[in-house]
Amino acid sequence: MNKSLKKSLLIFVLGAFVLTGFFAFKAKNDKLFAIAKNIDIFATLIRELDSYYVDEINPDELVTIGINAMLEELDPYTTYVPEEDSEDYRMMTTGEYAGIGAVIGNRGEGSMVIMPYTGFPAQTVGLKIADYILKIDSTDVTNLGTTDVSALLKGPANTPVHLVVKRDQDTLQFDVIRKKIAIKNVPYYGKLDEHTGYIKLAEFTTNASTEVRNALVDLKSQGIDRLVLDVRDNPGGLVNEAVEIVNLFIPKGKEVVKTIGKLENVNYTYKTTKTPVDKDIPMVVLLNEHSASASEIVAGTLQDYDRAVLLGRKSFGKGLVQTTVPLTYNAQMKVTTAKYYIPSGRCIQAIDYLQSRENDELVTVPDSLRKAFKTKNGRTVLDGAGIEPDKEVEQRSYAPISYSLVARNHVFDYGTKYFYEHKEIADPASFEISDSDYADFVSWLEGKEYDYTTFLEKSVEDMRKNAEKVDYYDEIKAQIDSLEKRVNHSKEQDLVTNKEEIKKILSQEIVSRYYFQEGMIESGLQDDEVVDLAREFLKDPAKVKSVLTASSK
Image 1 (cartoon, rainbow, N blue to C red):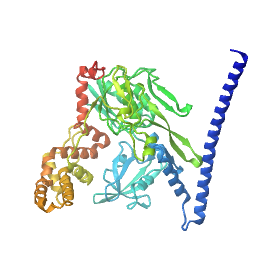
Image 2 (image 1 turned 60 degrees about the horizontal axis):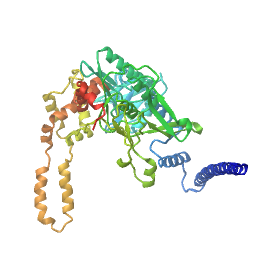
Image 3 (image 1 turned 180 degrees about the vertical axis):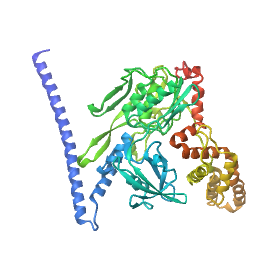
Image 4 (image 1 turned 45 degrees about the vertical axis):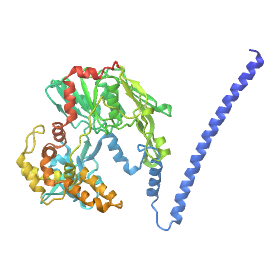
């Protein structure tokens, strides 16, 4: 190559670099100018509104509404946290706060204690489920919403709070000392049988991995050699806790999850760093459509390494990473910065929020665009729609009368009635209300409203509405009337037909009065089809092996 050609080539390359740099610099400056311009317009608009609008405006409220509306255009996880909400946000991410240690809710007449946490102040001083809160210190809270009541109950640790509550016909007073409350990530663990342990993992806040480790070690000391890990209804949380939990079951040095985003500093590969507690124990992981984020990392990674059989239903599909960014005046922004990729290479994110914004509706990744990946043993797994279980279990359906009795608080109220009429009950695993107790419940329901519409009734009702629009309605009206009479349900008969189902629902509610959250979970395991299936799998090593082995077809 002659010197002239080399020189021309060098000039061309340098020119290309200069032009690329110029356009990149110009694009960046154009974006910065657009941001500055629009911020200036927004600030001017607020000032002029404050000056000219006919009524007084609240700038803080208007700006917050504007910010939230802007962020809603991105995804549901990019959110603004003003200074006044920072404590609630900290509690959500750490599971810690200072208060009395109870879930507060509304059951129609005001705010009441729904569940005291075992071992914390509310339970220690004797507050019970269904206690209506009338006053907090000097504040009458009978007309306040649950959020406001909860805020009044929280405060600095070791400070007193005086409560006046209504319990049945009695008015009681309690002096409670607020304590630092750490919500349990593992609200219950125990043995399903002599060989099978069960761990319920409900959260991924601080210390989740420590709680799972402690539960696993304790169960192993009791002789279990099989394990069910339940992450159903677990919304996720801290990714490092998910990594540590996976590390309990797979060897040191293995990849668990990658985060990949636009900025280099958010790209990171999480690997196991410790010796596992048990890398061989046969495992089943339970998941459902409410298992999200960190739950999906745990379930998906164990699936990718063929370390556990997954049972249940397809998970939520949240593969987006959020980072907390500090703003001025102690505000914060939780912003999506990356996506999760588990060891097989798949991303679990199910909704394409960019496409959703463009189409004005939620857009999921179509099956035709889902990519196939391989697990360690060569099994095919797909991306783009959460984690799919190795064996799907259909969602359990309940009779309409059961839904109605729960929704109208009749099950809750009867649980309270039963509690004050019975000093003690059997342990959660064996308790079930008797037939005579059920007859008492049926009698107690007399005169109470719990009407509901069955699917068949709704179908006939819709048919009548459509028939009324045709010219020959009068000719078929008698037939529709006859059909309607035949399908009209009898509430009394439904109480007989669905007796066993309703008895189990009542029993779990009653157990919660005596044994709180832990007892309610244990009671529910006695009638859990997915848990029963998990036990059957674990009893048959050949069946587990066949699921975790790639098909030759």
